[in-house]
Image (tube, rainbow, N blue to C red; front, side):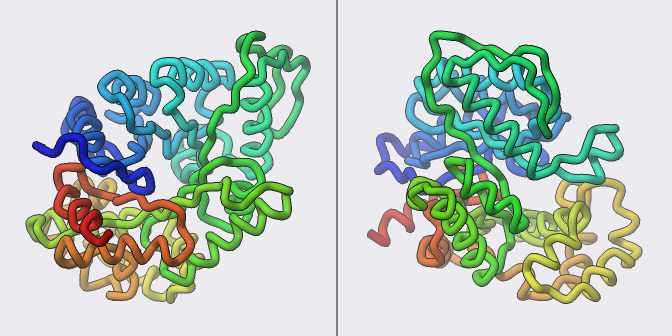
Length: 349
């Protein structure tokens, strides 16, 4: 990428190593390119094969100077709270304060399979309180709450900082929690316009009810951005493949949240092609399989995304801001793939 010193757009972000990367090292070039393009935040999701979040965050911090780095998301119960606090403190120091610790509820089926406890809203709220206190330099003695019980938790008595924290939120209770306690809230991909507006209102209302300034809570739209300058097989993977993978993991929640027809989900699950794919569809399905799966998904289910020319994508991205979102993650594409869209967005003025 040749873009340098581009106009910054703090309201735009991207997911590093979107989908199933070939190599973790691809992150280094992606973060450099994103910074050159003017994107404001690099989001780091976590999969345990090549995408362990703490390692990737450190690498992103080492090769960047301006862009924010945010986990979106890790789960608070996969590490001892002191380990997570240590990661956050080290990242803040490494990056000069450009780190945001983002957590989420996770996927229950995976947690069950790995023998992890399912995450509750009360646990996440308790965990936020622990992190806030540790970053104020407190020694927490005899903590016994929803997140767990520990004799002593203590990070550094000289600390008196605010740790920025984000929450990937889906259902109403998570959205309310985001408004009450978090600095940033990331919505889910393929939310309809109505769902997006409702989610933003839920977050902002909860912030106000908690005595906070709603404008202090940044709500990110996570918006699939699939411009037609990309090859058709890749577009199919980033649209049909991505949505189908979500339906594999938590289809009932997506259908319920968006008010979609549950009968369509049942037909999708019962389809022999879908049932025969052994893994995440966006990672292992062939183009032929994706073309078949596309016939199972209504157009309106794929519609909440930025598609068409770079200019059309840019206009759609701007539309997310008119729905009430404060910022937009250009989801599912690398900075190099996003360059024409960001340039078109910049030209909108």
